[in-house]
Length: 76
Image (cartoon, rainbow, N blue to C red; front, side, top):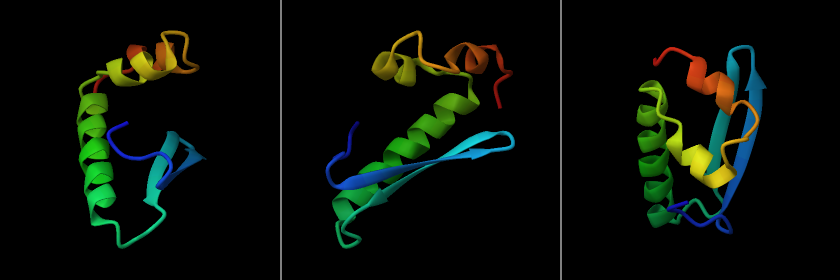
């Protein structure tokens, strides 16, 4: 991750169409971490929209739950 895991909290929420990931900085005045989070999530969002799930597979492995289904989905 390009941002600090110690300075942030990840929140995962299941939804009808999959899920929602939120990353919250613990110290809201930490502008540097906020920028890193926004930049990272924007990058990942673009990759997912194109059907590119290579980053999560690098982090969690090719046997990551749900990865096969994600790779079968149409981009966008």
